[in-house]
Image (tube, rainbow, N blue to C red; front, side, top):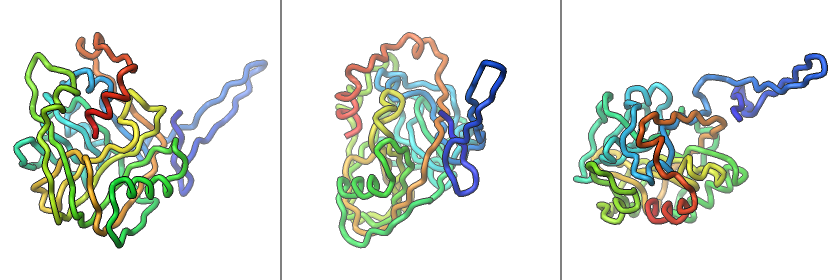
Length: 267
């Protein structure tokens, strides 16, 4: 379902049309990207080793100024923040992403801080997620999450570039590069996704981090927030762009192993 977002209200506008004995329900969709997530491919495809996509960074940024993902060949982590796409590689470098670079899996939105709160004392990742859950509403709400602050510690991973023949994602992350940052100031970028999107997106929290110097970061495995501001942007639409490659069309995307593999790969 694709609800509209107009004015101060976020929700579906439904019109019933009567045509003789027939009744149909027509959704009035706001086609702007506000409150939408634009996503390329699916998490299940990434787990299966589909590491090449057709969407470029330039195309991705037309649909959002905030988000995350990865790059073709699984070459590092992506952070989109304030309209700039950052490329975080396993060698520890962070650079502006090439607009012509392609992504096999990414999600962006136009961030609107409709809900926000300040954190003034140390908070673990579990406690932070619980606080965001309480502020966001029911467990079926999709939200984008931004945390600007000072962190006592942030533990991250960054995947390394892969080469054909590709191995499944769970095998890649078994040899991932991990890094621990201390007394760091920066921004956490991510999404909280409901269980009903299993296979499409990363269920639960999917978070990336980049420091203020745009020099360090990665996929968040754990953190302790010292103090900062948490902003939450609601999501009411999902625009899913599916690959057309032969690898995707023939991939084993059964969901029976999905929950276990997500725990192994996402931390």
